[in-house]
Image 1 (spheres, rainbow, N blue to C red):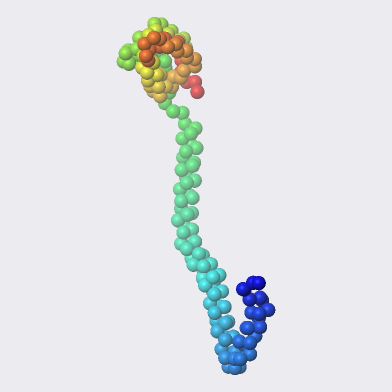
Image 2 (cartoon, rainbow, N blue to C red; image 1 turned 180 degrees about the vertical axis):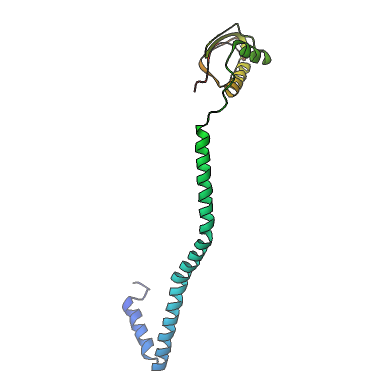
Length: 169
């Protein structure tokens, strides 16, 4: 059996409550109900809408300003995108040799033809070659097109064959 009163039982109790009230009490309860209903209606629907509207009216000029600034920055970025950046120094045999010497690397052979360079190393430290490749990639836009590394008996020592190209992506 359910302990909750049924809808009919609740209605009967409400009717009994209402019937024992005098006409003046009924009138005051109706007025009080209308006042409470209007208060709830205002506090739940009208006030949040009015305060939200006021807040949006305060924020709207700032948001328009930010949107305008973003549009200006987007146009500037688009204009800068179209500009050419400074071209790197062309890859030369002397330039590559100087960079290798500065890092303590000595290639067995070094051939430069146009935008391409072919290097062969024997018994060189792998970490040194990788550090040099990273440096020339960022400084001169020289990328590795082909690489072959063969490990030697000593730890970290390799034989390497590299093909480099300037300006390749």
